[in-house]
Length: 186
Image (cartoon, rainbow, N blue to C red; front, side, top):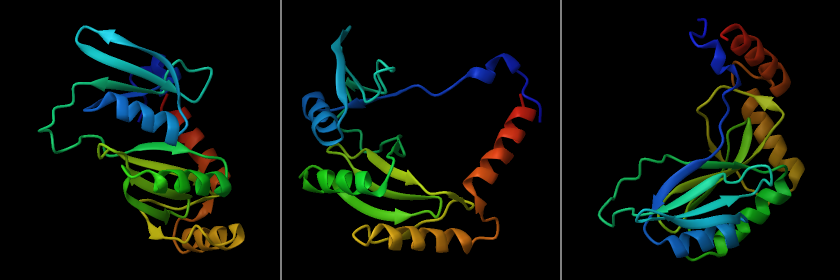
């Protein structure tokens, strides 16, 4: 299917903003536990905003906004996902979030194409921190994995899961296919 708006071919994702109840606590969590840097802070009308980034080329990747109602029990954010380069970093993040008393529902899993940790921040927003693997397999797919195993064992389990799927291939092969399909749609 051809893209009806070819001028949007350069559209790319930049940042996400979400409402929080306790902006001081949430800013501290994202800075002290997840490692974001506060780039700016201020008021826009009655709403207090905190701008956070981990990339010096991006003014903000996350914006926290005051004003989430206490009675709002359903969160429309399914998850916020952050990529790490290796298992050592994934373990370090897991250990940091596990030590925070405000974190809940910590889960470690593999999808075959990634190894992930999932958890809820102090206000119940779900985060995923993940490391890509060199394989593709169709999703959704999730199995628990022991991140305290040696790197080779973790990667062998992720690869075995990926290889068990009928459309298994290397991430490079999958990416080449997606580039072709997405390029054709533009």
